[in-house]
Length: 206
Image (cartoon, rainbow, N blue to C red; front, top):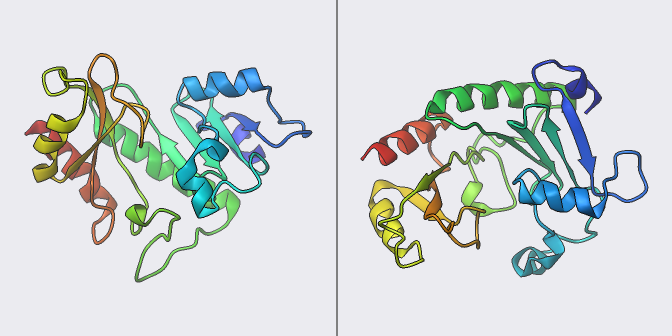
């Protein structure tokens, strides 16, 4: 990550979970990063990941890179070798998409070509991400649809629009106390990355 750290557009810090190296962080710092939604949770505590063997050798080889503005993040060794993310408060989806495209190009240039199949796209550990490997989402407050404390009604409205609903913290997490949910297009395979952004925009507009 030395080249990323030196890049004015993406400069930041790498936080390692591997004990005993210069970039290692304390348990307190780790918990703070998780709370701020910058770092992934303890994979060894996830029964799904454990049963699939994905959380083996936790926490060695894991960590995250966070840019100075906290809007560009790379997870290392979570479900996939790398998970590259860009996020931003606001309503202009293209701003985030454009930065993500640039970020992926920069990371790939420094790390080497990403494994890509001409038939299946990016082969990821989770079958639902097969294809583009890209998930575009946003957080919305839906107090009327979540008044019962669940996302059941929100899912019923979103499913016909091709959208998925999750808790504010991702899969297997509850909705926010203020009715905040995570909404994203369901499709990843047989679709272009730009079409995913369009599907998200059109879905929430409806």
